Image (cartoon, rainbow over all chains, first blue to last red; front, side):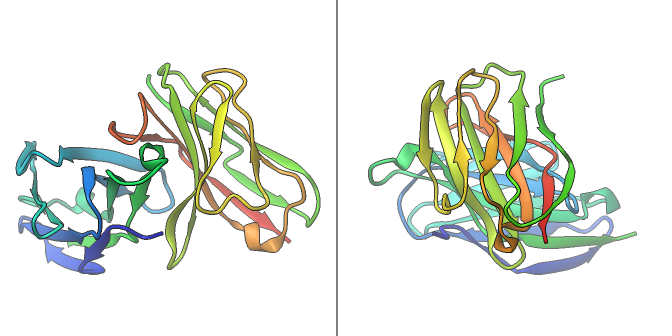
Length: 115
Length: 113
């Protein structure tokens, strides 16, 4: 059951530019998380934003959450070639039995940062 | 170093030959989970465990078994692998479920021929 859907599916930018990725979801959430995955490797947790938060920062990352629109955005400022990876949003549902059982991941955004 | 360790990293096997993928975490996390990742389908949860001796099905549990006899270990068992279980598998753990960030293993690429 897919919850988060990222947009765009692929993004190519020049080093030094900002990268903005979006995630939309359908049902109420407790939190939303962003992960990075380098090709074929394990996912790395970047940031978690709770449903009562609107914005969060971590280094060059800025995440916003709009629960009224059921959407989130991840901004990477001053991008580097090393930021080239796939980025996933994951939602923690607030609804239903077993709701505390899992994160539901989107299909990911492929970010390419050209040197 | 805090980590989730999966073994093996790569595995090629034949249809029907039982196999186990091991997963171990050193962070004293209560929650562990298995996902599979397939092109175009994203990550799908297979099984999860909220604590020792507590396991439950995820979205795609058919053909898989798990056990959680100790807090640190959460092996994934394929009793009779089939080609449609060819995939990239990830084990993940978190302090206490979905309201905390997950730590992922490096993955196991399984091919069933």
